[in-house]
Amino acid sequence: MHLLSGMEYHFLNFRLLPDQARLIYQEEDVALAPKTFHFLCLLISAGNAVVSRDALFDRLWQGRAVSDESLAQVVAQCRRALGDSASTQNVIKTVPKLGFRFVPDIRVVAAAGVTGQL
Image (cartoon, rainbow, N blue to C red; front, top):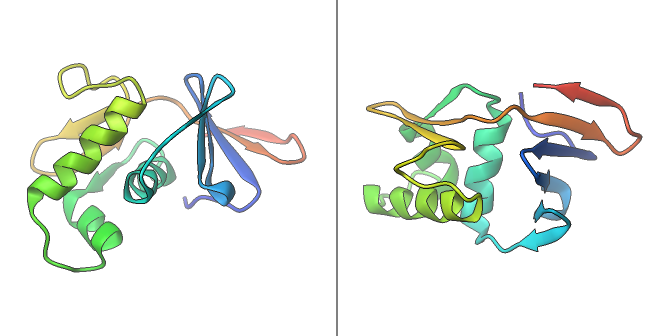
């Protein structure tokens, strides 16, 4: 699955609006750096499947050589924005040696009000 134009992605008390590059928590905008927002979109677009570290490096940095710490910082920023942490991993789960998985159920809402479950 990939994120579709004109759709919103609802999880927990958040709404992700990819077309507007916005994350909203209880009607308040959540500030995310562009790379952190892109990381969140990649996880959500995978549903509940694992996104490999290699895929994240390729998509976030387009093959440029960066350290593991760069990815760790993006993950930490995203977890913090979602009220998650490395110790709880209720939203973003680390899958050792593989990558990351988005844990909550995601509800897809079309602008016309049509809904579906991922």
